[in-house]
Image (tube, rainbow, N blue to C red; front, side):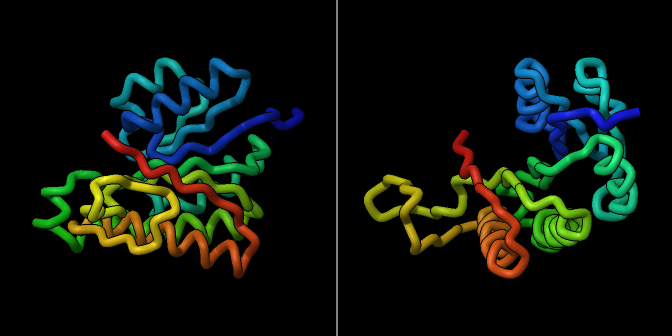
Length: 176
């Protein structure tokens, strides 16, 4: 059996952003390969054929077969905890789930030779801009909550992985 072409791994594909990305990719001729914690309880499993329920990073070893079977070379990483208020009350959970899990995922992707990552970041990395305008050229990023801090840390990790491992990435700072 030959590997499926144009497959893209999507972490957190049962979530709002990840599920829309998966649907869009499928509509445009790609094979979205969705992994996440709550796939079985999500409508995405009825729309996307290639869904795998797993708890990253605990189940990172399952990515070995998935990446090989689908010939994946790109990961869209949308899995994270995302409540600003909850992040302030439980920073330990946010650092563990957003930063540590991302770090472990990136190590696994690097091990598997995946060198392209699209990261679902957040406008929270800007904090409160002095003139009220968020610019992608801003270098003085000052997140004002734990959630924003975790997203900025992941962006910085991705820059370091580019320098060290030639892993290319782009971070989308989503606004709601």
